[in-house]
Image (cartoon, rainbow, N blue to C red; front, side):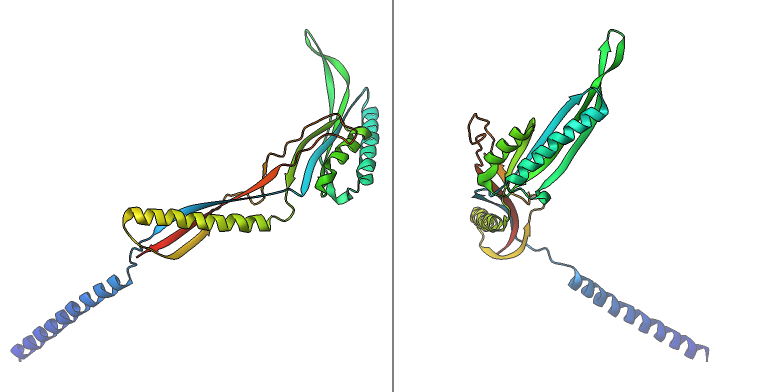
Length: 245
């Protein structure tokens, strides 16, 4: 009876061992099948650029006022600013295209050998950002606000209201440039260029066009200061991965 039990135990142990041996290769095979294969390819960054004429301008217009008291300086500054607003309205600038960007009020100190000795007066600086939607009107607007009392004009910039066409042109140029770069690398490596597998626009490029030229030249002229809008440049980069044949 003891020999029979021993024989059965040995058979069970052998069977379990066979099962474990049979399971291990299958597990290894499944793991190997699930492991991703390294994908070969050529990755390049294509650059594209498109140029266009601006159709919109923005300019900072301000008035700085000095007076002996706070009430005097604020009232004088407000009166001049209202004249500027009236001049802008006469040029067809809509209220929604005028936005206050800075309002500052401070006391100017009198300094002597021992430091501050009193207040000389008060100064107010009031600035608005003006959007000019007719590019041919920029010079007339600048002349009008200057005549109305503006004594600081700066930060003129030009843009395209709808840059979609420039973006598309720059994107097409970037794709063409990417293919040229990839073909050159493939030829150097002695391989064939396959299909595109990944495309992505490079993050961090400007959404709006950048100024190209477009400075403002002040000049004495009955029609107002001379303005040169120049051209705008929209730049875009695209990263493309090609397969290898």
